[in-house]
Length: 148
Image (tube, rainbow, N blue to C red; front, side, top):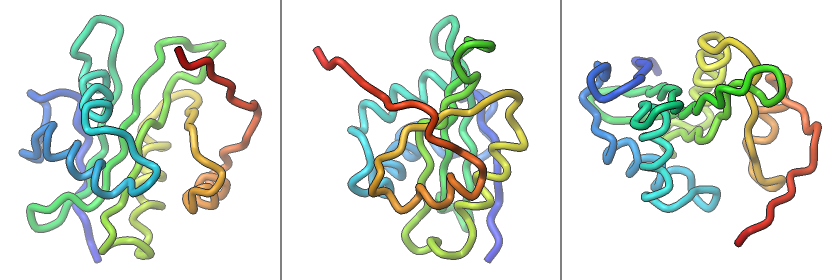
């Protein structure tokens, strides 16, 4: 099954015609139990699109027949040298396209089109851990958070 892939860096540089809301809805629906609120996803998209100074990144969108089939969102940290340059915040594949290699294609294209290190957070019980391991992601640190 073939998909069209497009990199999106802003609303004005979006060849797909899919809106921020449509992308957020897709992620909200297809991240399953590993997702966030739609508001959080929209904030991530705004960061990737560089809505404010110091923010940037991109969205890699896979689609077919006017339907989103996969999405990756990368936020750039702008902290080269001491923090990975990129954070893979979201990756999701449409339920109907799982098991067809789309997740692998999204990862390959994301890695090829970034310069520098990529970090991601993943829950230990997320089946995608195996995909990340295959691409060489390692667990170097234990993440700890103080939630206020």
